Image 1: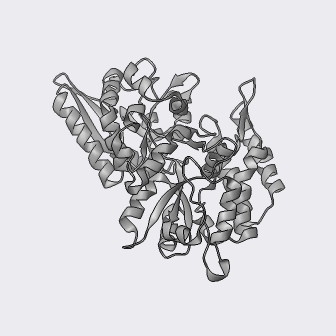
Image 2: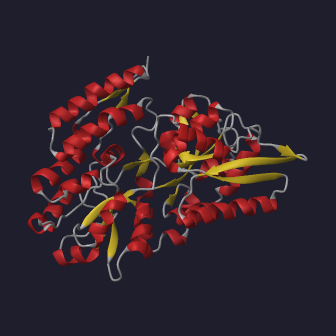
Image 3: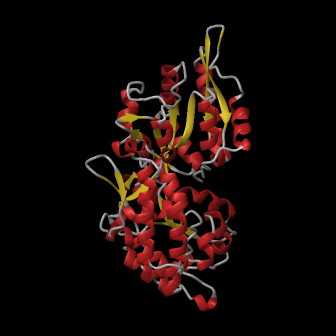
Length: 432
């Protein structure tokens, strides 16, 4: 669901940028009327329809400020935006994710929204969400959709096994989760208690580790960030490693997969559970074989309870936009509680707004909406949210190190050494 953001500019990315931005360069005023370009990354039909319908509703009631819907792509958004910023062709209103904003914020490409947004919107979204888009004391985006990681389970398999089924009020601990996967799995028969799709292992590991007190990044009094791998950081990676290599309760073959890649095996009765983002419920609802009974369970809890990190989807305004006030007014309309619910349901995610989260449609047992909504209060800013140099640390250090550890190629001390020593060398270059 969430995007991958390649970091190297390519000719293809440049061409895409020109295509998406229309090569115009002006939020043009025709006959005194303002046109705002809104680049959306919505991709599921329900979500695209909801976005376009809201744009049409705005245009019908605001004849002097027209919003032009522009379709973007999660796969190329970072490079496409960088190209458009540097070329003076950026959209006025920008859809992205909070973990992609730091470089743009510090680079001066995004407007500070602190004085532009109405009090209604500021107070409706809790501070824990605003923290994900706040850099250097300024707000560079509105976090509006968020997605907890959950366990998607074969309900019949769990019921037949007799294991205790967790709830948000009484979740499994990480130790209990490991015990349960041992009980559910039988590697000799090709059945596993859990399948970890960890093609991109870093965000999943860091975000889930908040429940065990893991922080990984620590900011000193001088403002500089260093990597540490303390006891709280060990629990989640050690659990995955041991499930794969010691217990044989987790499938080794899924470590290189994306979430969607595990669904055929899940539907085929190969895995009892798969940790996935909450929005994967749409694929489950649409693709599950007739009669297949699945359910959503909360991720395991640690000393910090069900706390986990998230990188919400965001809406920002370009610093170069000549119509920042009008763009902020559109954001206020677009993110009214009823509209935020509509967008969340279209993406099968959770809204950040407190009023939207009260909507009855998000508390139904259908497709386990209520389970996800119960987790909203436990979502915090992802650990790497404001760390400069994180993309390089993730790509060059953390991803290969975690992949090797999870596969059993290296042990925990070597994992720690690579994450910390190699990682701090990377971060130091960004903090001189």
